[in-house]
Image 1 (tube, rainbow, N blue to C red):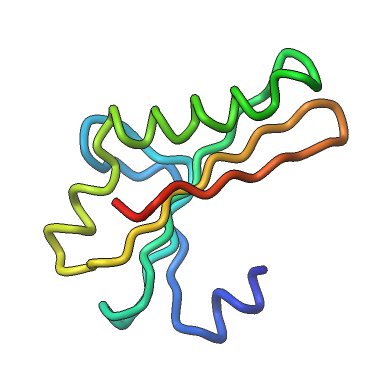
Image 2 (cartoon, helix red, strand yellow; image 1 turned 30 degrees about the horizontal axis):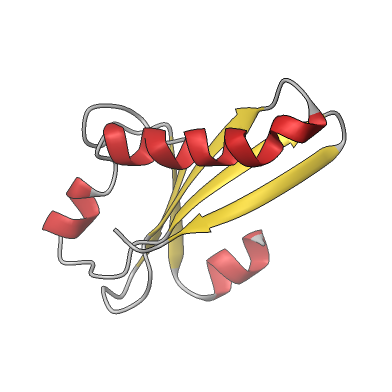
Length: 98
């Protein structure tokens, strides 16, 4: 992933203030026509709660308005990712663009 990020002109922002909180990771492209990606991580309480936990992560991105800053900077494609972990398992959910 990091190789893709660097070779495609993305800068990694981690826990930087945005909206009313701090997203876990934001991938900021150097070109505003590329997607500005926001990622939030959560730990699930159980395997069968992983999807719900992903949805909570995405809800946090929206509630805390993490996408407002990149949108104001001129980025129009802002996909939101919620990633849930439980033990050694991971689940990734993509929400529609901001």
